[in-house]
Image (cartoon, rainbow, N blue to C red):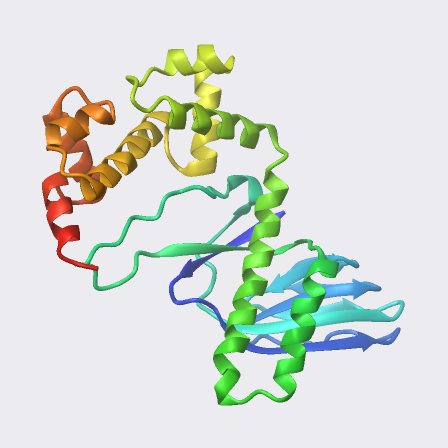
Amino acid sequence: MDVLKLAIPPLPQFLTIGRSVWAPGMQHFERAFPVYDMLLVGSGALYMTEEEREYEILPGTMLLLEPDKRHVGHRPCAEPTLIYWVHFSHAPACGRMTEKEVAWSVRVREGTDSDWSAEEQYLYLPKRGAVDLQALRPLLEEMLKRRGGLTMEHAVDQQLLFGRLLSALQAGLRDSRQGSRSYQVAERVKRYLDEHYREPYSAERIADALHFNADYAARCLRKLTGMSPLQYHHHVRLEEAKRLLLGTSLPLTEVAEQVGFTDVNYFIRIFRQTAGVTPGAYRRSAAGFV
């Protein structure tokens, strides 16, 4: 399944939604406009071309047409076809990949009181693929209902419903990954590192304990999290160190020791590289704000 990668914030903005049943012989007109057009088919079949690529959208599948790309129905419907369509605005996709390439567990940098803007994050949406329309239908129908009598008082509620739709579509992509062997291997590596973060890192020990080739296990973890096993090992240690820095008055040497660092200077260096500040500065800055 192809996946579009959209940069956030800002979140995509909902524009409108519709539902219609196309009679046999009807087909989409040609156009190119500067918004996304999400098509979800409940019955029948819709035939669309975007640029030079043809798509057949069958029941329980969707197609996300992209801004400013020419699209047209290249073939009329052969039977009554139920279609939900959702228009939204956002910048063009900043990437395209398969669902297997999405690094779902990549960590987003923790914000600080010194930040003036949010770190760029990403929303992943299926370009074309299967969707659980039965599960999505109540949400789509609620959006349709609100569209008919929308007031400014509830405008934000409609945007929130749209956000739930995007979240559900992204969750469907993620759930389709969970049965893959690489996902299972990555989860086992994560679990091992979560449980043994105080121990010195050893690729050989992980491979022996889990009975995986070390290079293969590392590739699986990087695909899921965007981090190598050593980077993830440091990440787990430093998250626990942050908890200790904020929740206790332990000196830095003891914090470092409790999370597995025998050299406090090395701990400080790794912490600064990851968090952007020293452990002491992190503790002091957090202490003065709520």
